[in-house]
Image (cartoon, rainbow, N blue to C red):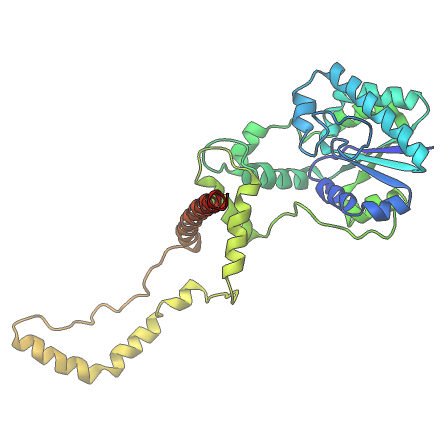
Length: 352
């Protein structure tokens, strides 16, 4: 008997970390009779692979097909897969895709048929506090994955477009509950601790170490990525920032943290001490100036500490410079690669 666990998300509740952990521990899982089927059943060995059976196949499945066609194809793949796993001695199959929480219409008919045929199906879902979820969602789709054109939007501007369509969890839970009833398990993400460990334990899996993926960046990196993405009018995928962030890591040998900007400009007290200690020199210099018919140096108005840009203003300027240099470096590398390829081709021609 093979039990099928369908992990439907929600998004921003550690789904990527769960998926990465399962993906990179297939041998340990297999020894425990567990098969991870992937995001779009790309790991389901059930005959000829369909176009949507790949890690990035969610768009092709959910947006590129009608619900009836998608469900028909899904039933065919899943039913054959479960049959094969039963013969191979597996006891648990896991399908994990956070798109399923809100797009169940494409899969429910297939899952219901498999359930009615005798397969034990359990739907598992994580939910978190709405305020913390929307904060994480803004970082993901408002900044890291800039899913709109133009400059980076403030949270309030982004929320107007984003709306409440994905910040309401109960409608999707009711959908799954209507079909699976108490076979729907809803976990509290905020009280789960390590969500990967929680998921593994809930499914009786042991001996697997958690892999963290798509973790919220620290504030410095997040600010840097917002500047990077905000320079472009087009949409910006998170992967585009990767080469730049890795480049900075490689070249920052000392990982130096500089003094605050206020300590890099002379304080007023120090300037006044300079004037007092140079009193004799000032009087002497003034005699030369007066002899030349010029007004003498005047210290009637005390010096003030020079004003400087705010750290954020300076950061933007520096980051734009860094990004421009990084882009030129990438272009030069591409040209170098092209020239090397041409050189290899010439050498091959001569060898022939």
